[in-house]
Structures are given as structure tokens and as C-alpha cells.
Amino acid sequence: MSPKAADPKVRAALIEAAARLLARGGPPALTARRLAAEVGTSTMALYTYFGGMEELRHAVRVEGFERLLGHLRSVPTTRDPVADLTALGWAYCFNALANPHLYRAIFLEAPGREEDPVGGVTFEQLLTGVTRCMDAGRFQTADADSLATQLWTAAHGMICAVLAGILTLEQVTGQLPAMALNLYVGFGDDARAARRSIERARRRMQPAARTGADPPPRAASRRA
Image (cartoon, rainbow, N blue to C red; front, side, top):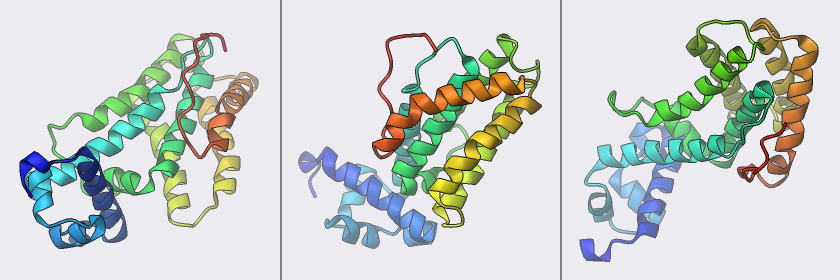
């Protein structure tokens, strides 16, 4: 395949196919021959668009984190930082359900390059949300990185249970607010205030849940 014939659609298809193969069988399943068969192209496409398998795997991680970041950044900032933090959690889950193969590739496969900051940018969204809650006096002053890690691993565990078929989406939808409430109260929030914020987030994110886990439109208003 000549570089002159390079097509962005083929590149995107290769990334999607690579994510599917990784999700099915891990790194051993991702070969140039299988990739070509998935996309319907030649094995040379791997080298035309990425230069090799390592670059392709990196591109899969970048794509997965960029989609996650798009969902997180679609959550508007309001006067209620706990509601905003909860909405970030919903956005995280929506992304995983909308892009299950990419989610598996970025979180359930071997980590990428140590110097690659692509994943850190998404975690910073959560760190910012936690810090806002502390600054507003809703959470007690603590290590923001620790609180954010607890929130992320809790949501990640729920998502993995859905992707593995252990829990249904309906079960997780019911358990996520209860889990958030327990964590927020543990972080120092008032239980009644936390319930109100969680309910605000639920109302805000319902339209996204009904439209197949697409990111919600960014609101112009900054009111809760």
C-alpha cells in the first residue's frame, strides 16, 4: 500500500480492530495477519499507518483515553462540586459502555510507555473534581490523589463487573449512587447534602443514559 493512498478511515478501522482483538485474546491475539483480516486490507497497512505493532498499540491507548477525556470534558461545571464529581463518574461509565473494547485495551492490558502522559490527563479531571469538593468544604481536607484513586477504582470495579457479565447494567445503575453516597460521607460530606447532589447529577445525566451512553451536551449555564 502506497503512503499516498493513506486514508484516515482505514487508520481508524485499524485502531478499532486492534482494540477488539486485544479485548478478545490479549496481546497474543493482535497480529498483523488477524488485523488485516478484521479490516479487509493487507498486512502492510499496519506499517503504512503506524510503522509497527508497538506504535499501533500506543495509538489504541491514545484513542481510548481521548474518547474518555471527551466524555469527562462534556460535564459542565456548576455551583455544586459534589454533583459535578458524581456526573464525572456517570460520564466515565458511559464512555466504558460506549467503547468497551477500547476500555479493556487501556485499563485491562499492559500499561503503555512510562513517559506517555495520555492517561494522566483524564485522571486530572477527577483530581480537579475532588479538590473542588474539598475547597468548598464538602469533603474534609485530605490527599486528593488518594480520594480520587478510591473513586476511580470503585467505578472501575463496577464497570469490569458489567463487561464480564457478572452484574447487569441495571444492577450497577442502582448500586453506583449508593456507593458514591458511602464514599462521600466517608470523605466528610453531610449525608443529606450528598444525597441531594447525587440526585442532581442523576437528573443531569439521564438524557445521556437514554441516548446510548453518548456524552451529554455541554450546558451554557453554570447553575446547579
